[in-house]
Image 1 (tube, rainbow, N blue to C red):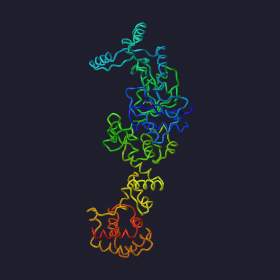
Image 2: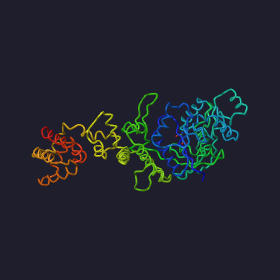
Image 3: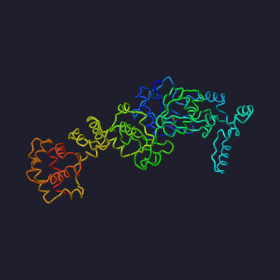
Image 4: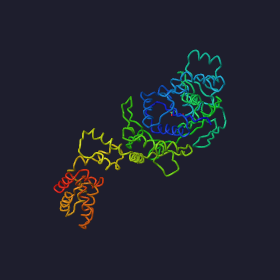
Length: 502
Ligand code: GLU
């Protein structure tokens, strides 16, 4: 087999949805697994759908996700240019070739005429399809004389070039994920390949470019499966090698009903875009994984599992591990239900894989932003709470009690923690703490635990009020670690405040 060449071919018609990122990712993983080449091709032939900033957004998204391309608009290779609007001059010849070989034809039907036909069919309860059964009766070069056609062309009548889909032929299509698909060509319509604005349609440009760029595997979303028959017919018409095709399953709403869309994200409070996007027309802002605080490796891992699994128990994968494990044959046919909770889980797992210095740096940055200076050991603080964080931004909420001593306590917590002898016990505890010379967590722990044992009381009787006194809630890291970090004086001060104010 030729060396693998795959492409991600988005149209810059808006922000790239996470489904698009997943398509890019699968292409990338497949290419890297096979020492192949991953190409980015911008499919911008439909000028009417052009959206300012969308192409830059695609680049920024792939960049942030660490899915680099080997060839693309910003990385010229020998098959460029990689933007279809810059390849414009190339496509017409291919359309002309098909006309010359009687595999395509000029059609002059006006939108009004086609509309009238659609309505007429509808009124009979039928659907109008422009194909073999009526093409010879319509305003096209199959029906008009050569002279009429030339005249229309020279007079500048708007036209399109349509593909003449062969009649009543059984096609045996192959999809790497779905297996064999059989379809009769008589059900297809004569798709438009070229428009009189001088631009090819998606179908023509897409297959011409896949051919010229020597693409070996077309890996794309399921929404393109209905175009597969046409694309294969075009390859056959040009007598070109047909690449392998793999159509990826849809990403479904969390309910499993229908495709995941922008509105689902708004309703469910989760992003469906990799980066934040501001609509250039409405200024409406859509949230992004990056800005919400996700790590790119968590997003990649989550997306990899939306439609694929390695066939083992392992769920946490680095990009390198994904490359090693990825197999197209393990991609599912069925749609993949998006699970916002699972995204959070992937995020937490990947955050916890970061080394201590990452947490310290992030935390120092947070403190700088909040203009907090402290004598406390910042490293110890962040390491004491890091495992409870899902996002780095959680580090502050989890550690705030170190910097701001509690002044109020929750009624319910107080009810749980305070017994008749609490005040007395807390008083005694302060004396115990005062007596400790080496104020480190193990010494504090040993001393306090021995004291509790000697009193023959339950641990909770001391630990719960102590926790409330130090943290202000019944949650948080190891209490003796907290004592050690706060220091003897501050710990005792908080306990005394608690005795007097609870
Ligand atoms: N331009 C198409 C899109 O926006 C590409 C489909 C394909 O990969 O063939 O998804």
